[in-house]
Image (cartoon, rainbow, N blue to C red; front, side):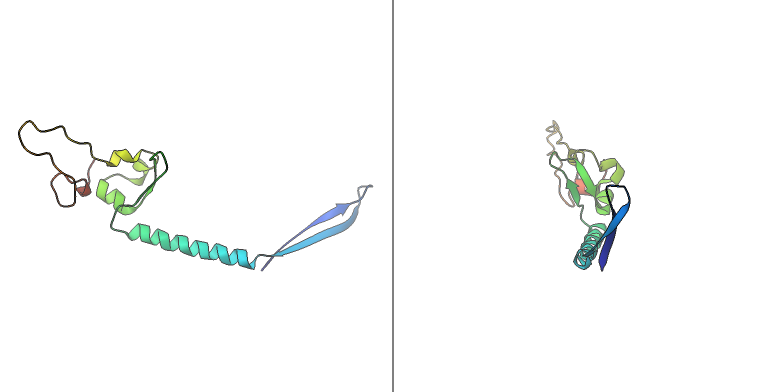
Length: 119
């Protein structure tokens, strides 16, 4: 596969004195672009079908993307999370109980678990 281009060469009087034509073999670049597209599609399929929440954040902890499992597990839509600090997904610690009951702990299947969703 080749990319072809050209340009007119103008002389001092302003008339066309020649033409420059060039071509470049872009076979390797096109193959690489196709391979990259395939990898991106496979990665997106993994993210879309994962049952675990997958959240990407930048250096200051701003949410850049979430997968569908994140929406299901936490109860927020992608639009509600992207651009916000990831701390919105981290449960706040309850103050020590005055009733003598231990505070709820987080984790799968435990009372007070953030994994069950909710805001």
